[in-house]
Image (cartoon, helix red, strand yellow):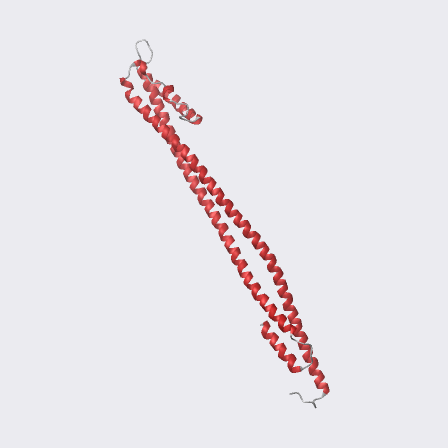
Length: 260
């Protein structure tokens, strides 16, 4: 207990020192309050930008998934069309093969022409062009290599029929091989595209998850800062501006403990 006979000058000095210490504590509290306000302002801005980035990444992921589904459906549709075309070509090839085998036993006037083996919807225009090119080449080759001539100087009807059937079979075989190769190439490209889109969607999901974790971490820090600020305000409100030395130093010490 402070003695009543203590020197008044000494009491004034101690009172002045305690007042200075209290002012320093209040200044520190004001600094902490300003820091908390700045942190809340920064957090609000970061939350907004994080939410925007998350929405953007989720939109990008949805867009990639939609594109993947569209590409898959388109590829499946094209593959089905090509497989149907291949089946038709193989059927025609089998028909031409059977015609070639029986051409030697057929009568001269019963040769099968190119037009009799075709239907309007059997093959596309580009494949007809390929067949025409292959047939013309085969006709030229077969005519040069054949030396069977009838008594009047013209090729026998059965020979022409055999050459025509062989040309058709050669052209159809070429188309079947080419379409099979194109189908395999299309399947490979589709698998590569599907893998690429899945990887990009996974990357967008990873970035979105990382942003969510960042926002959660900031939320925890904000909660701790808010609690700290509340405690600081409570103690700050209970510290009066008085000259009692023991009371000022005790409350200042309590403030330090709360801040820490």
